[in-house]
Length: 225
Picture 1: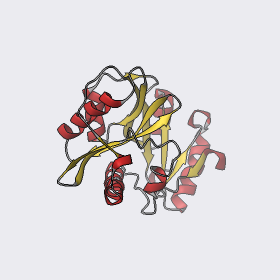
Picture 2 (picture 1 turned 60 degrees about the vertical axis):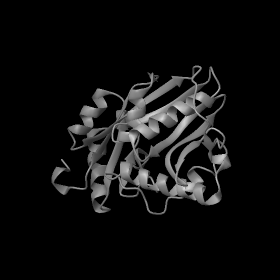
Picture 3 (picture 1 turned 180 degrees about the vertical axis):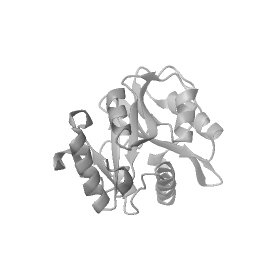
Picture 4 (picture 1 turned 120 degrees about the horizontal axis):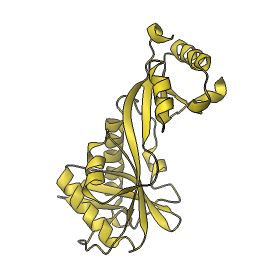
C-alpha cells in the first residue's frame, strides 16, 4: 500500500497518490485511514474521467485543472527587456520574494511549506535561463516577471507573476520578441492561477497532452467509506 502514496516535503499537509488507475477500493480506504491518523489529506492528479470518478466516489473533490501547452515562437517584435542576468542582487532577491508570495497564493488549499528554498528552485538550477528570464521594473521595483528554464533546444515556463494582467501580457510580448524564432515554449497552466491563465488565453497555445485534474481528499473520518 505504501507504494501508492508519498509525502511532498514542499506541501506537507497532504500525501500524494500515485498509480491511481491501479488502485483497488480497499487500497484507497487503507491510505485514507493512514492519512487520517497522521492528520493529513490526500492529493491526486489524474488525466482520465474513470480515475476522476473513482476518486470522487471515495470523497475526493476537484481542486484545479492543469493545461499542458506549447507555444511556437514566431517573429514577434518586443520592447527592450531586463533579464535576470542583468539585475542587481537586491532585485534578484525581490523576484524570489514575489515568487514565494505568488506560489503560496496559488497553493492555498494544498499549502506550501514555509521551508521551501525558492533560490534552489530557480537560480540554482542548471537549467534556469538567466538570459530569457525577464522582468519589468517600475520605480526600481519588480512589477512583472517571467521565469524560464531551458528544455534541450526549447524552453519551459517556470512561473509568471506580477502586479496586474496588462503588465504581464505586455512583458510576454517582449519575451516573444527575444526568444529564438522557431523555438518552442512549453508551459503548464492551472486554473487557480489567474495571472497564468490570462497568459494562456492571450496567446495561441496548443495543448500537447490531456488536461490533468488535481483532486483533494480532506482529513475527515466521516468519509473513510
